[in-house]
Image 1 (cartoon, rainbow, N blue to C red):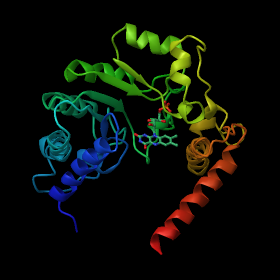
Image 2: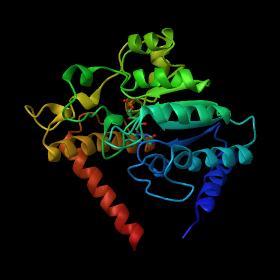
Image 3: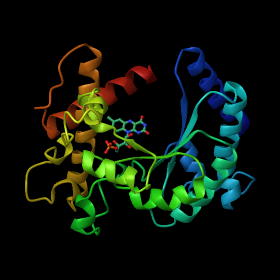
Image 4: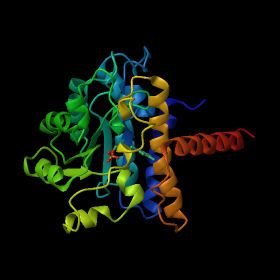
Length: 281
Ligand SMILES: Cc1cc2nc3c(=O)[nH]c(=O)nc-3n(C[C@H](O)[C@H](O)[C@H](O)COP(=O)(O)O)c2cc1C
């Protein structure tokens, strides 16, 4: 089994390989419930050694990775970190902790801090909130903007927010008010990678929001149905929809935006199953 230090070095090696391959920067993913955020969160990090317990210990893995990556790629190469504003789970990684980690990351002189939130168990990263969240909160754009504003004060480095931005007005407002330094857009880019240019040139004011119609039937409160099974189909159907568009673009095909949520769900689940079966052979 790989030791903690081996794993840290593997991040650094991957960063070096990305640089050698011609990528113009790397991002260390410390959000969304992946490995580094599992170290940060007290829900998943039950260690009693120097990698668990206090925030300082839980953050050690992330900070050591950043240091190792920096050593490997040099001072002039852009290194970004994606950090959760919070896990939004009881007993999980909190905003106060995120602010503290953001401060430590800026001490290490990273080039960009991207703020997101949630995990694949609690899908606020895709705008899916716990069922007790108010309707007004659910409908707004830019899910993590208030959190990012608080983190930005501690960060002293450029901060980007990804999650829910769909209109030029909201993006420009966030920039003008100094809430963020950069705006991140993810899902719409799976359908139209030219979107940023079209927004900047004012060719369009609004980005299509396919996820709003990618919900199973009507009357189940759409994305935020309280029925867990429906929520799961909606969530993984939406993810499947966007993966399908990426696959099509990679083959030089036009996007297929007529794809329904249920078909996208099955296609995604089936593809994952086949991939796993192949891997386990
Ligand atoms: C198909 C798909 C793949 C994604 N893959 C990643 C990923 O590899 N890394 C990541 O940080 N986020 C990933 N995300 C989440 C997005 O980066 C982003 O946080 C989320 O879609 C919310 O932003 P948006 O409202 O602009 O789409 C993915 C989302 C989708 C739909």
